[in-house]
Length: 165
Image 1 (cartoon, helix red, strand yellow):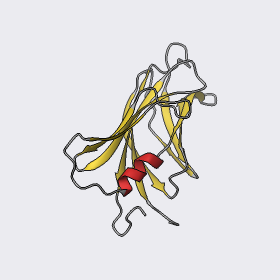
Image 2 (cartoon, rainbow, N blue to C red):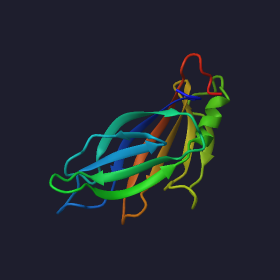
Image 3 (cartoon, rainbow, N blue to C red):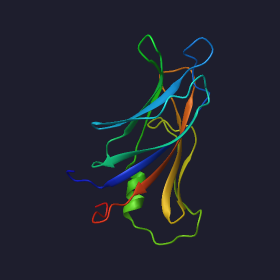
């Protein structure tokens, strides 16, 4: 791959208070996009608070591109309904990964990312040293929909021979 910096594991944990798109519920799934990459979770039937707990892995070549997320309701006989979208930046997270920190105490908060008009965060997001690596937990408020949030966790995957430079 051209200019591969590393891999980003995105753990799509769960949805919270998602919009109703069928009669009383929805059958949600998530699509992540980064550049030409497109990854999808499984469908969770009849659930407005789905637990996906799925790991999707993106190849990172440009830390300036945002990761786009869209939640859909799976329909059998028509096009799937959109249940909101969000996007998040990875630059701050990858910048701290590149610092190659050596052994801060377990649970150390390396930095905090505040919610703002420029991001979809619904609450402060911390980049934390856990189990010898950096992770970032995100709660994203979905846009273009009446309600709903998605919880994610980011983790960097080092590739031998690449140092994220």
